[in-house]
Length: 497
Image 1 (cartoon, rainbow, N blue to C red):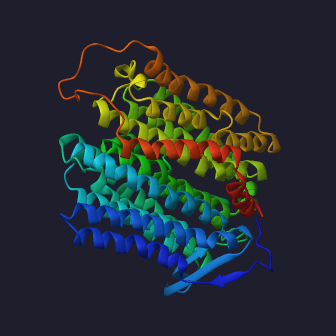
Image 2: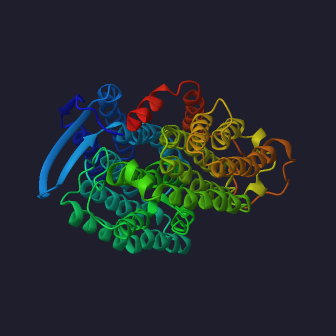
Image 3: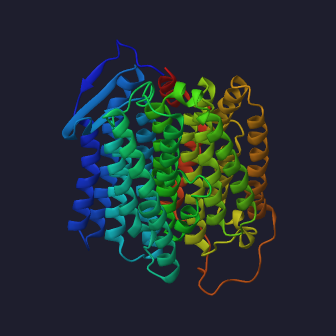
């Protein structure tokens, strides 16, 4: 996990520019209120520009280099600064790339349903991506927490977008968990870290490694970080995620399959690798404790998913389970497991955004939300339901999906750690994944469609091109990642060192 002394470090404002592009897009969207075509064009152009800026830094990071940029100092050891390394590049690459697909999808979705407050929606969407990429490129805990909290606040209007009773209830739970209760624990962790070290900078071997502090105090600090970064949705701090499914499907797709939830697990990985460090985690047995904690989440959330008839609710509990795969990989502290956990950030993002896109496509075309209502719909929405099947393969971990690659490395990592109980966890959860995903495809293609029709359903159920096209692209990309995983594997191995 150590950074070699010969690592090339380049001073560049490109990390700041990536964030600034999305913020500028949000401002332009607000100014273009009522001019829908121009607003949509700004959204699409900004997503492309952000991705190109992020991609321009990838060659250096793949070669083992680091991009840095410091804006200003708050306190000694607490700068507002950016640092682009392998772990941050994984998160930023997948977030910025999927914004392009989500932008096209969102335009089609919002138009087809004639949603209200579209200007607010797209502006908050852009700021959310700025916060996610800013967090990915944060050089220290101070900068990371600023973007973490900003993401919580700016996604709140997206969760209550429909402005009905259900949305207000779900958004309150969302805000209490992410910007309320967890904030106390997070501030305590930051204060104790700064007190013990005089710094909040991320260190390759761990900021707290070698600090003269009691194991009890360090354990309290670690638990405060786990509780504070509640976006990771480790049980019992998971209830916000199913509640947030009241948001429009594009919000669920990008923010709750990529940006928000990945920000949570990304922060936990930063704590494990760069605040505590692998050696200290091993010495204090914090890794194995974390592994058991997230294993409980993996199995329990999968069982919850199995019992849900609402499609988005099933996907939400699946996300709770799948996020803990990422933390499990980091907590096992072996090279293979770490690689598997990091690669799963991308594998899960591609597959889960596809599944949420499909749920939105089904709703746009038929106004159906429940799995029990999907009998025969695959014959009317073949592109959508085939894409759903492909996304399901990634969640289950069946080749050639990207999910197979990440789960393969997780299995290898469990063997390396000689912790065979986690092999059982991975096997049981994979069986549960198949049990709650495959029946959806079976129902859609092989069960007879009901003759009854909802009053608010469209007269004709058919694919909507602007909605269907992005989900086909992301489904194919989830397969391509399984066939060509080199980019993410190289970045993940860069974290291992």
